[in-house]
Length: 76
View 1: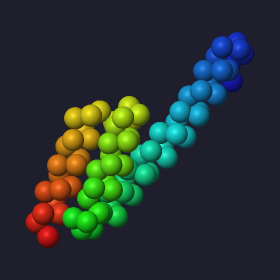
View 2 (view 1 turned 90 degrees about the horizontal axis):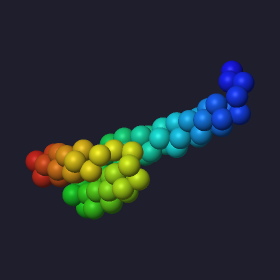
View 3 (view 1 turned 60 degrees about the vertical axis):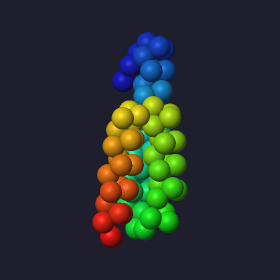
């Protein structure tokens, strides 16, 4: 355990950020898995964009995820 106040605060902040990032990660995975048809695609793309906007994933990764998802749904 940290003794210095600034180290304690840094630990609290990292714990909070970790929880927030895990929620984003779970949301992202669930959104991609739940997307079964082309009708659901805009909703999924919007969710991916929101997560990229907050900085959890890079914008290029978001574009790649959206592209692959659209490609997969187009095959069905």
